[in-house]
Length: 116
Image 1 (cartoon, helix red, strand yellow):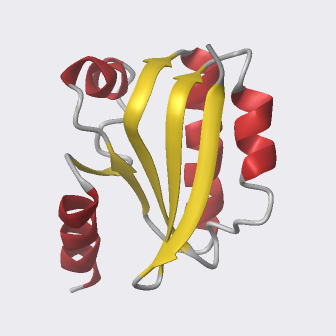
Image 2 (cartoon, helix red, strand yellow; image 1 turned 60 degrees about the vertical axis):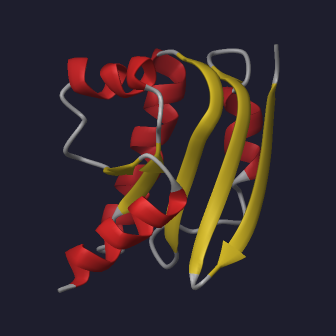
Image 3 (tube, rainbow, N blue to C red; image 1 turned 180 degrees about the horizontal axis):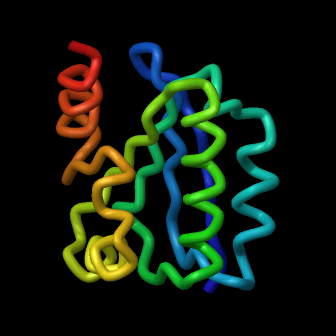
């Protein structure tokens, strides 16, 4: 299975919606699809709602985006309603590094809470 990536702007946030598998075979396409997005200057949310697989390569790509966001003093939001995917972040100790929510509204709310 491949990976589809689409981006949209919504209320001052860039949302990257992923569908498929984010793994060693698709991570290059993920990075290329987000070439025009600068997490250091834009608030970015990655929507994993339709992602069925996340391996270490995919996780590494997300951490790379997180590092770019932090360089601009921005958080990186992750929509992740699936417990099995969220478990990957917990096992690796990255659960607190990202701003999580079960849907876009929850992530937006958490991002807004962080601004206060």
